[in-house]
Image (cartoon, rainbow, N blue to C red):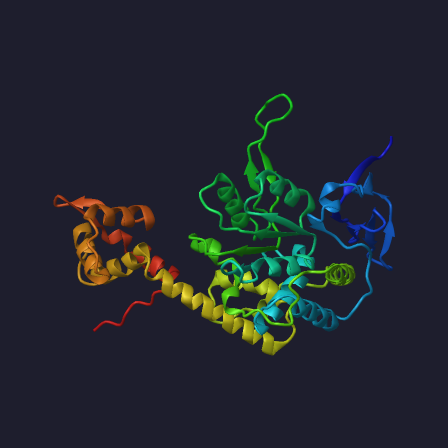
Length: 423
């Protein structure tokens, strides 16, 4: 029985071998790079594995010929991790203005992208800033180094983004990620919400050739490098990003205005070396829980640990930890001003002096603290809809009963608002 030919991009075989697609644009050829569990990596046009005949994608595939997806062209020379990091930082510094610490973060994130499938979670990298701040340049530079960098825009049709991520994996490099008021934006947010953790595909409505409903689960897990002007309103989504404010990074005079073919060749050579590093390191890397940041929230450490696990320099880890803690503290302070978060504190304070809290009393206390005039009905909606607390009717008025005090204590802890000492 003839073997089925399977066009292959990446695969981890049961025996521990790794397979990666390579594309040589100059020669207009593709091949499969194979790293066996024992022995040196090699290139091959196809081979049998588990009853299938694995073959490379064709060199005429538009994703490859257009540069939409960037791949290595060969297996580069192996190098020590320290030397590879130094070369990545030098390349990044030569073509884009980042703060010194973010240069380090970006170089390590590039490494993380090449072994992201060894982790169950992965953070995102974000370049934030106004027009002309260098966001797009940063995307081009980092995307040219990242593992299977796939370039897209918030203005792109979303369907191919789902399909390419599902089939190719790798790193989504997304420009203008904060486009508003469109169905595309909502779908991109689904990708970003589900893409930090393994096993959280996005379901999309599909039909088969018989027009039967046949929903498909698209894999969207993987590193993502995005550029945007503002922040997302969703706090949970915001917590997934390691962000550089490009407005604070003055454009250096030595940075070339145009990216030349020399830059593309340098990036290609680095991708080849990064492929060799992936083959050498993929089965060696893992989460190092000892590098968790003291005082950082569980979500913060969940996002930070994959990166910190690859940072060998203890001083650099401390600098990154300090940055992450500062960013999280600012987020907590900002969140404390949100109506539903402030309402938790109000309810907790009122419960110190009474067995239940009338919604009207909560409205009075909230309005006095915030200096606003919020109607009782709106306060009730915040309590029930935003906080998920129950209200009951007692003596003709709606109240938050004593049974909700435990939930309020949990909410206080979640929003990192310590209870004030009793006077």
